[in-house]
Length: 85
Image (cartoon, rainbow, N blue to C red; front, side, top):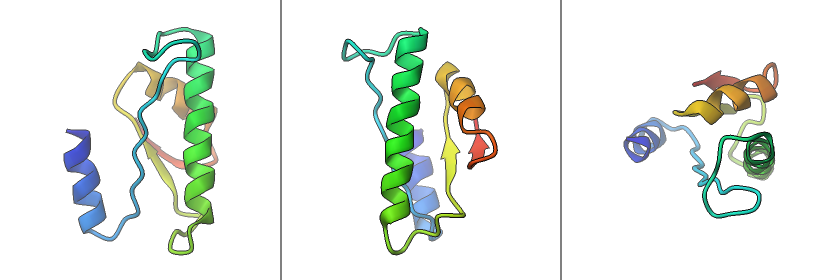
């Protein structure tokens, strides 16, 4: 479903970046503070990278998530980006 949503948004002129998160110490993410912080750092990297792109308006970046970690990310980035979780 995520890919279909990314394609839909891109087809309407939105810049889209997708990230696959890994745990801090393993390839698979666990629900613990270390892994949640690692995901937040990964998302921050993706957002900072997007902001450097010439065709991206840095004031119009949103974050979208579909799982438990999304709640953590929503709280982590509150006030910085438009969030839909």
